[in-house]
Length: 136
Ligand SMILES: Cc1cc2nc3c(=O)[nH]c(=O)nc-3n(C[C@H](O)[C@H](O)[C@H](O)COP(=O)(O)O)c2cc1C
Image (cartoon, rainbow, N blue to C red):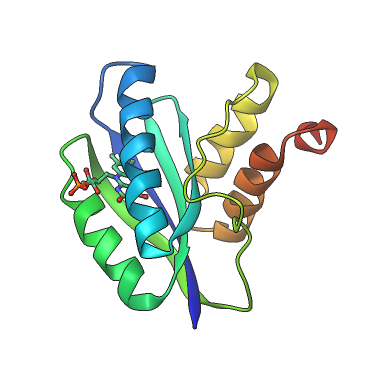
């Protein structure tokens, strides 16, 4: 059984620190491949939003590590539920580049993550899949 979750958190890293995000991404890809976890990570204006998909026990394990990470704080799981299949099956973890015109929408999605988690998941899916669709 696969579950999907989405959380938001507040970054405690130097502003727009691409090196920190690259480091998080590299470790995440290595671990998530091992743990059969997939997902996407977004970063905008000092906030993270991350979708994680996998077996419940695998998700619990990843979440425990991520929650303890001092590079962010105020981690709050907005939604978690069993799902039919993976949305991010192609990525152990992707942190797609956010085009400047997409940034306001991503910020909005992060800010409304609790009330509209599905919209935030969809936003990350669109950005990750790239192409013209991402601009809509
Ligand atoms: C925003 C954010 C997202 C992260 N996402 C993941 C992830 O998806 N998978 C993962 O294994 N670690 C993730 N990490 C890193 C973990 O907190 C932790 O540093 C890492 O899992 C430790 O791996 P190691 O024990 O192999 O060194 C994330 C960290 C942050 C700050």
